[in-house]
Amino acid sequence: GEMNIDRKDLTPETRIAIIALSDALEITLLEEVREKNGDAYTPSVGVWSQSLPTAQVSWKFSIGCDPDKIQKVEKDCIDILKQYQKKGPDTKTLTKVKEQMIVNFGTQRQNNSYWLGALSNEYYYNESRDYLAHYEDIVRSITAEQLRDLAKKYINLKNYVSVSLRPENPDAGQAE
Image (cartoon, rainbow, N blue to C red; front, side, top):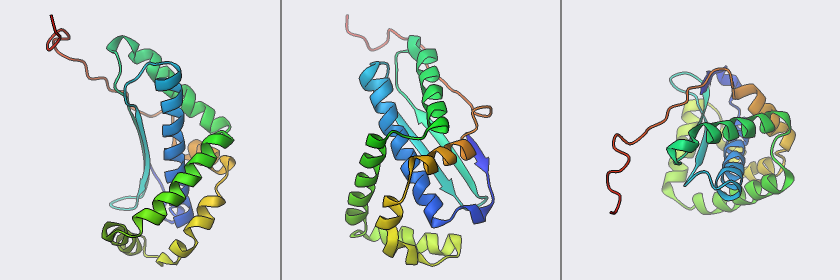
């Protein structure tokens, strides 16, 4: 799903929190749908923002699973989203996300591609990159309530598309 928004809503803090929401949802999806239920192979979640050509927040779940489990997996994903809209992530998940974001920031900022992205964001959002000096503090200040509010605001469960790809010949490629 995607939602057009006012560009001024995409502050650095909001964009960083959207990344945290995405990472938290992915952890929960992996734990619930793959590890606990065994219903998926390699599920992934993406929640991202963009400023151009229009400001919007988009989200997508990509899940490889047995075609007979599609409806169950879709229901489980919707339940996870509803859980996040009600409470946000649990403390363990949020702590893990923050730790990963801070470690990744330390690693990524040593690469040219990171700085190219920072300069591009400065240009696209017409803002100073001074917030990068406070990145770790911004990440540490993220709360479950903040992520809950972002999930409520940007994930519309009444307006999304569900697509399933099924093999034309499900027996093709199987060993005899």
